[in-house]
Image 1 (cartoon, rainbow, N blue to C red):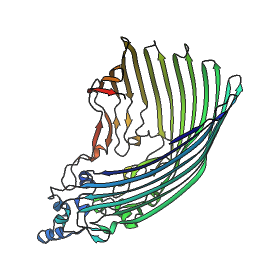
Image 2 (cartoon, helix red, strand yellow):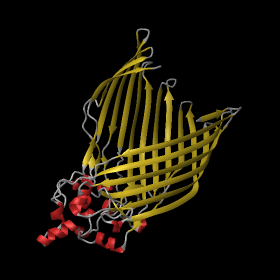
Image 3 (spheres, rainbow, N blue to C red):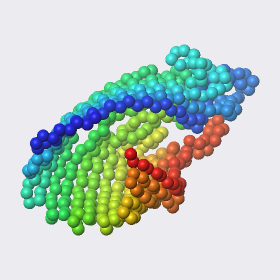
Image 4 (cartoon, rainbow, N blue to C red):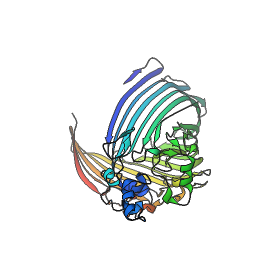
Length: 501
């Protein structure tokens, strides 16, 4: 709901939003379990089936036995619920004069709760172990269970004021006072190895502070403006809700024999419990120009972003559960150009190009998977150095009542790293470009559109799961399939019909 009121010289706007969300999901976990842990890693060190096998052959190993479990599979059952309430009120000046200002208040309340069960059909019968869930024997082969909750409360006051100084100069200053509280809770159980359970753990953190912005612009001539802006950004922190690993678990994990690592264990290192907020300091220097009565526009921008305590996705040391980790610092430097041209009343062009160098600015020990270190100067993952786009549109009338619109879109994405600095098994995904075309015919309330997405049928990898090092045979003798690539959708040609009531 949005309410507006516009008395003389000001405009008051209040926006209120409320939403509820629920999702049920299912994922195949077979490859994760057989490669990350091995089937024996889901079971106690000694279990009835292994003891019976060793009674006949003392030299048999758990891997020898589990390699015979050829029908092993695993899947999840997940449930998630969210509730969100947002409220923002802002007052904006609309009157004439050299002063312009805006002020407002912002509120955000968010709650979520989710559960995940992992099932391994046949594991109980194969191993002879009865899983224990919530302190009671489980009637289903539940191999893993987790419960997580989160609540976030954010409050902020913000404002900005600008002043025309004459001779083409304008100065703007602004700020935001903020505060937040975040509470998280987590429980993890391993029904076949309950000794490694993590009881329900709650974590609360809060912070408050101020962000500032300042900008100065100069109108060089009636169609050209240069500007400089300095601003600050901020993202809230939180906690990773897992118990701290014991000295015994850490010793087993860090020795040179991966074969004696404990089974799945929902624990983290002590320095991973707190997720610190990350913050940026941003600088931007640019020029904007228009000419030919506004038919042509162009802008160029130099930008610099200094990032402190960057938050990146990580995994728990043992059970490969997702957590958030903090790196040290990063920096992003680059340039961006945009342009628009109305060649004729029917033909229009829009385009952009950017170059970005995004790197770590400090060493970040243990930041990557498996505890691998990242270092000052390492290029950030997922950040192409070059990107560009072009959109050409042609609109005209065919006869007196029929409209024709032709569109051509081009996108270029440069190469990206899958891991910071290509460390911990990272690889480079090559650059690619994409062409899309469409033709739309409109008459009265009807529109018929013919389109071709990925016109040249470009094959390109847009992302990967895991690293090539996961290709091979697991300790149980199964072929691993955890590594795979996401690719562009192939050429797609079709037609759409739309009727407007």
